[in-house]
Image (tube, rainbow, N blue to C red):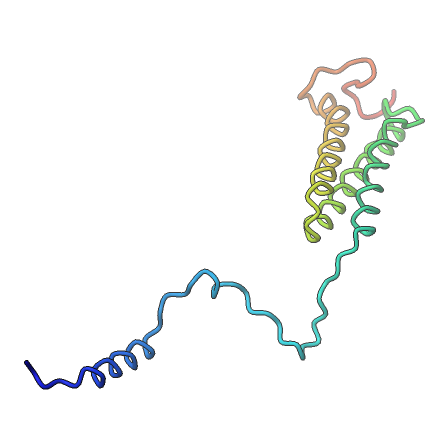
Length: 145
């Protein structure tokens, strides 16, 4: 047998292992938390804020169905398309808010409102650009003659 001091050898190996960098573990790959003394305030979520934005977007989406003016051509068409754009933007605003605050059901509903607004806009725009078949209520012209 050799007269090696295995305790000393193991301590040397331990020091070498401590000096090398190990591959990062999944838990160490997370973003570091802000220090407690930082001036960054954490974002607090209120269910009321999420609910209010989604409700407003849903109300806009429902109200556009009851558009009281003629949207066949001219200024009425442009006003209607601007209102449809407000529905799309309102749904997008609600979807960004719900995404940031991890409200899955509200996010789904707000994305459906965005889709609803895009469908309503497509119903009036596509016949006028030659992509869909024009009808009496959705003619191929933008202006009234």
